[in-house]
Image 1 (cartoon, one colour):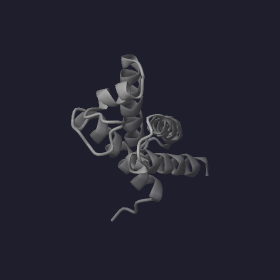
Image 2 (cartoon, rainbow, N blue to C red):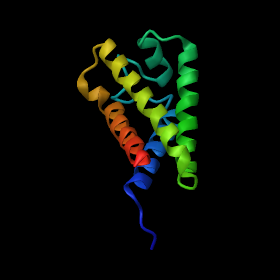
Image 3 (cartoon, rainbow, N blue to C red):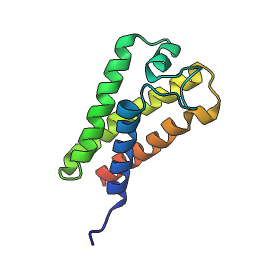
Image 4 (cartoon, helix red, strand yellow):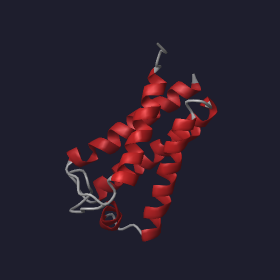
Length: 125
């Protein structure tokens, strides 16, 4: 039975989480959406961001998720992908603060930030 490292588990969790949010649940309401948004696109609007930001951030997150999965085979891909996710999650946290969301709405972004930051640290070891 193959051994799984912490990095492997984090890569899979972060990648699948991003793909779930952006490909499967982007049009669905969740209790973590910013402001009173029901969809991911509405959430970007609630933050006062231009529509283009929705597409740029979405592309970066989906690409990062794919690179994290590819990083299971090609470890050099993990650091840049995890770093992009970490930076984007800091941006998400700032946006939640901007619209004065309750802290619970920031929990997924905070956890994704922690996992991505851990991946960065592990990749540097």
